[in-house]
Length: 431
Image 1 (cartoon, rainbow, N blue to C red):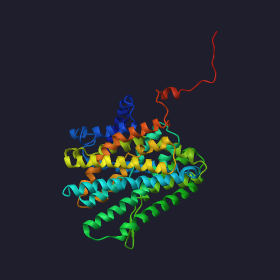
Image 2 (cartoon, rainbow, N blue to C red):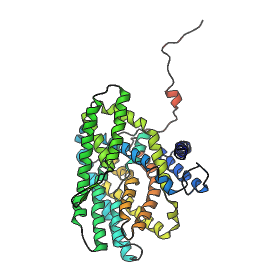
Image 3 (cartoon, one colour):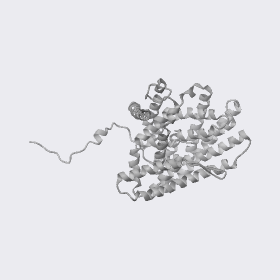
Image 4 (tube, helix red, strand yellow):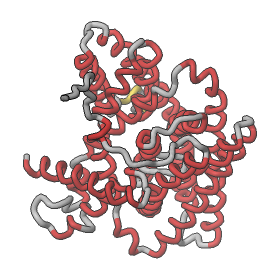
């Protein structure tokens, strides 16, 4: 038990201590947590093999994946809160158009660039790997974006649209990846599977949305049995954990492989709950406070997972740089063009694309599927390198974009001790 508790406590303390240093540089706390993970990871302090100090191997880090899955569940649940009907009526159509177009444009641009690399150096990058990397490029990390928004209490049209687009991006990215992966498999095996190309991705999306909606309705009904805020919070936490567990189930219906997307399922849980429960806003706010330590652990563990050994491969570094430049350009141009099309304000048009750069969990999950391809290891290494760059730089760029849009208040020094200091209702004067 001590092998679990001590590393977890050190991860929390280390993440918070590093955040004090990064605050001096005006960097987001997310970056601090990731750097703390790198320091405690198997390629830094963990390499010393000192008992209980850091994570000694990548296998040890993977043992804490249950915490990461829980954190992703709560993050997706919170993002579902953005899909309130009153908000969807004002910008729902715009968010859907931008969410789809920016993902498609990014995939096409990265595909074109990497196919060009394949034609020039066919022995370095296969055509199937180029197509799969293009699809993975569409994915955006919701966790880092949401943490930046929360930390700086960002609010405004850009922030609201950003959270909606990031949420929609997950479903679009899943479809694009499934189609590209099926084509890549066909190129290697000379056979196209219509089942995996069209049916299974749609089944996964429909099942995820259906399960999330059902769990949202049941959660609302169960909440009605309790009136205490603490008990209702407990029910909320329990249902998010239950939904995370159910989303990991996989099964077959005839020849169709059926599964769920954790992010989509928990997002739909939050969406359904916030639209049918009168007290959902208060409960979600309380749940967000409860999950702060869990989110810190999620990013520290994510930092510890970053494999620094990939930096020793010149091919990976070169392909990684090409991928990052192409994806960044695709995200910016895709968002810029779709914002122009939907007549968004200049502040949104100029800044939205930069806020979509962070990439992490969803992309890494896609690489696990891509490992079955001949260049699967190369695909994973390129994405690992890009995640290393995007996760360290992306939150800062997101913050700067929200600052330029005027949706983050200028930073100032605040003290929790001062803010929480009780104010006496009466003053006694002694003569």
